[in-house]
Image (tube, rainbow, N blue to C red; front, top):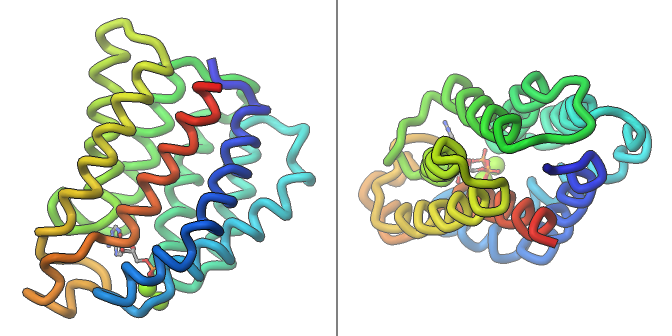
Length: 209
Ligand code: ADP
Ligand code: MG
Ligand code: MG
């Protein structure tokens, strides 16, 4: 089970993680984009965290919805609407809930991914955050469908996410700004895939205690 309190802790931890990796994410984006991914994410999640007190006694769906609205309105780049959509779709799966079991988490991760897929139209292998979010859901589902618990499922999801992040390096970008570079996008890790890995890693850290 993941409690509402752990969800709040996760968002706070992720905001800190982004702050610590702000320069790194921006450096990754400098190689194949416009050098603002760390700045965008830091701005968006700082604002989201600042607004958490207004939803701290609400259900998990309401918390995600508030985060979503803040990200969409605060982050100018592609990552704002994409992460915003992830949290918005996730919020509808967990509306009214104060805690999440492994099935709830699976639904949340699946819906978040579906939201990003329909919003961004990227496919697996296009060198985007999808290359992390998608294998993570597959790995999570495998454990849950075999009767495994949340921690085990998240561990497998994070392992798959890390591999997915590394797999973006040799890829040719087909979506987003990096795609403007064509062949020159090859050989660089995708910034959005990297922040998506951090998002899942932080959830595991909080849930694993
Ligand atoms: P921008 O590219 O507008 O400056 P960011 O730098 O904040 O925005 O985010 C770039 C990241 O967004 C990329 O590294 C990639 O992972 C992700 N991204 C871009 N376009 C898409 C898309 N269509 N679908 C999924 N993810 C995308
Ligand atoms: Mg950018
Ligand atoms: Mg930008």
